[in-house]
Image (tube, rainbow over all chains, first blue to last red):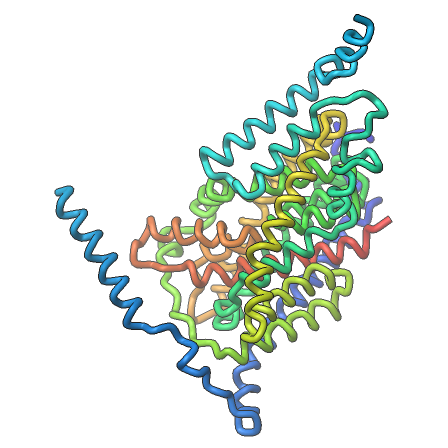
Length: 87
Length: 375
């Protein structure tokens, strides 16, 4: 293999342009269709919600928020205390 | 004494070549960068150590390397050679990816597609230099900025280049914070960098459950050779979003992906024996890899500016740079560059859309190249 010379003929012989165009067009086609489906999904689900209503997520599966609030407050308090001490 | 001399002549010192020594030094540098600069440590440490192991020479016929049938490394490398490990990595990636950003702002998905221009223009460059079409396809996928995809495709199209392509891919992924910002500043104006984007809408759980099925069907029906990578990506995401398989999702995004990463990284590193890695081809692969990253970044940026010609609600073009698949590093870089211009401009969530779209786009691109270029 001759790696020193750059040759446009090799691109033509290797069908490079066709492969590149096929690849880009296909990638864009897939992503455009995904994008269109995502756009239509909420509207479709709204139409179906009359027949298949969405079940709300049970609140019992949520961790106790008050414990998180206390931990967060403790963390913020520690940081403020540390910063004031360093000043 | 004869036994002693015979033993000494069978040692690594006797068989060491300059190439092996250079590779061991390169491997130590990689490990050093991973530990001190935190450049993709989860990949560069296994790859680096694997490269040290792979470059300790042994007697001809001793059969310890990845290419020696029957050796332990040969069997570990089987997962790379046969394209098994990368889809498993994609399974883990799917199980840790939140597609909410994409579902809330689908037009940004196209920026992930635009960034794939890096793959195909690099393919043309590789052809022009003299790589065969299959080799050019394997080299071009470096522009997808997706390590598992690069390893998967090169194992199918050009296994003899896998070591160089893998190391180039992961090295440039680690260098995204260095490569991208200058290009982002060069191709955008200050006014464009200050654009603030609308907050995303809320996404229902149903949308998150239906999306992986729909997206997989679209990708697989149009590009069937992307089934393996795209299928595992969306299967992992389904495990995460279904709400009833959290145990499997947790395993996929933690233990399983870690095990596969260790085996994949180590065996890829071990495959970089000096005789196969230190070649002129490898130098060209590294050069083309750098070029492909730059083209991919530019492609996403410029396409965002093009879209703004038609949109009332403008896109901040910086977000286009996240179209390279280096998740989530590229999105973080977008946030960092935007933050420097305006500390109150938060683009991370928006940048995740082209970032994950780029993963899908590069997987589809790899499927197309595999179907067209496979020997």
